[in-house]
Image (cartoon, rainbow, N blue to C red; front, side, top):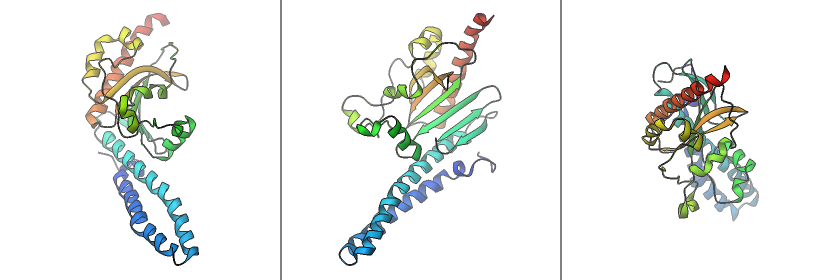
Length: 254
């Protein structure tokens, strides 16, 4: 269970989500009808109501999606096994860092319409097409001593979470299906015996080696339809992979 000392937003995600929904319902059931009525009676008031609607609508959307993401992350953190500790929580990036005293793992949730999502869309010019990524999870952990230079960054893996075929038309709400091979070429070569465990995690879509700010990591992508048990199994899998790769690197360091 989340303790009283944990971040307020993380603990109250469900309440924030409901507040966002309440704001959206108020806008459409109260403010919008009033705008229509005053449009024919008082132009000044209708202009004010129109401005309020334009300002509050994106706010309500972002609060709703952020609250949902907080709630999802809270459900995961609250069900972590004993020994895991919440190290940090970034409410803007919808990210938590978890540690078990031996290894740090990061869980980041991509919401469809949270504030950071719009920044991401603008930075990667995603709003210029219809290929908006669905909501999904990224989980990663560093690989100590790994000297491989990854060619991809975390967001180059989005093709594995996006749907294919006609489903691309609803990419924002529909994710890909699980493929037979989830590991990238490096992992299939170095730790193929762990692939069976990966296939057993149904929302898992891809596991590969990449980097964050120059630090090599093992990255996993999971579709939105996950349970906390899927996240925990993925974290265990990433820890096993990282430990195997670190053991492989040890002889090269001597």
